[in-house]
Amino acid sequence: MKDLMLSEYQPISQCVTNETPIYKAKYKVIDIHQHLGKLVLGNDYKQTYNLSNYRKELESLNIHHVVNLDGVWGDEMIEMIQHTRCMDDILSLFVWIDVSRIDEEDFQTTIKTHLHDAYSKGARGIKMWKVISLNQKDQSGNYIRTDDPRLDVVYDTAAELNIPVLIHIADPVAFFLPIDQTNERFEELIENPDWAFGKEGQMTFNELMDMQDSMIEKHPQTKFIVAHFGSYAENLKHVSERLDRYPNMYIDIAARIAELGRVPYSSRAFFINYSNRILYGTDCTPLNLQLQKKYFRFLETWDEYFEYQEEGEQAGQGRWRIYGIGLPDEALKDIYYRNACQLLNLDIKQFEE
Image (tube, rainbow, N blue to C red):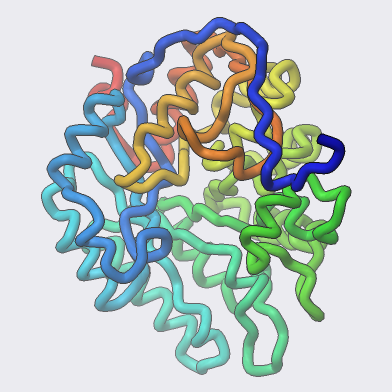
């Protein structure tokens, strides 16, 4: 056989490596990044899972608190609060903001009222998504920047309420590059062409990083959780420089163990050095919680060359495998629950029992 379609090439590794059985996390966990609503699961999300079963599965994995990032706003926020009422003791809700109204005269008042109302109803954070700067435009036809002065009210109100802003600024670097033979995410982007950026007027990856810096620097009293390893898991030096520069910046590891696990030496040193700034998060939904075991294996073991995706699935992010980084106990405790307790104002004693 001389020629073979790339989609048909499915090599089977002949490496014989150690596999540490991981059934649950070593310590109690707070997952700062889950989706229980329509963003990932669609408009019929309530029919896709059973909350009682979801809770039991969390407990079996040693996950004792979850942040649901799908709080939205208005009636949808109320609907989500009612939907998850039975989980109030182990769930924190983050709400969105409606930036489509950014040009309206009462935008500032509307946003502040929304956030205070959400807080009074139990919301404990704000979620801002990449569509703000990569898809949404104001009435002048300009993409809305997250460092736009009109959005200062969001960050100032978050600081006033002492709640964090979790923000997803950009996707992997490869999504901003040509989809050609040099792109390491080629197969993923061919299957999902809408994930690629580069439309006329859209910001480049570097411009998004500069915007992210500007936003954090302008609001030193606001606590920012920059999702997906600070937007740049491919460049640990870049992220470390920002953590050193901005004491109000935190990062989560959601959907980035594929990137981090292929550079285990650098990742381990980074995780130990910045353990007080890293949050455990996965991007999971109630439908794929078993993926949590991959995260535990990455963080807790020295296992080598294992698949980062769920068993039986083709590698979605790239044709590589990952390595565990065997973190020490104190770093694990920081990442699993200590840092999140601080940001969510949770009683740490319940996680140390």
